[in-house]
Image (cartoon, rainbow, N blue to C red):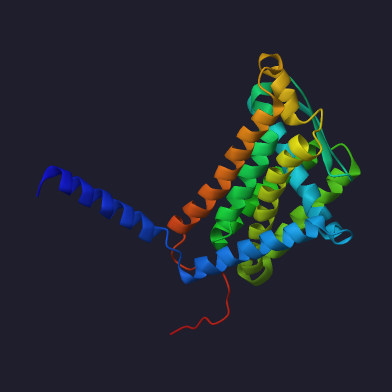
Length: 262
């Protein structure tokens, strides 16, 4: 066989192998349908007056993850975290002393998208959902430690309590779908927040505008940085789904229904 033909055959086999590996199993197809349904429901509720109040608690927790991203990045770069506060208008503020703002400023949007993508990835499997829920719980405990108002304290305590309750309910079956829902919510909130801050509302003091002033005095606009962060956040979502299709081929729903012993 000529060398070029062998190379073409190898490339075709590799492509087919990868394609077959990401071909979803029946349970994975079901999970993808849930992701699509969650997406549609969240988008509808987000834009309907009064009904949008249903999402308010989840938005507040997502803002908490956004602020935790700032705090964790600051902590990793030597900052002392002074406080994290959330407000009822779905805003948040992280105060710190020191650290590297080149790392901590992008970590809000990107960190929130990362957590969301991690939860979507874990939502394909019960055991993975339990592991990630522990990680989210620890993040909320740190947020609670740095919290300086009662809304932040109350939301984090209730969210941690809900995770614990769902952990034990039907061996984590419902936890899986809650983690999946919150992952979709977190990713959507991160992506939409970037668009809203830079296109719809054009907030003067968004993370992207502060980062633009920090980098070369604003020679690269906030919209450009926002677009870069948007693409990074979107890539997290895509990678999470592909990785889940590759890793969680065996069905592990956690449900005790329909099981039998011999």
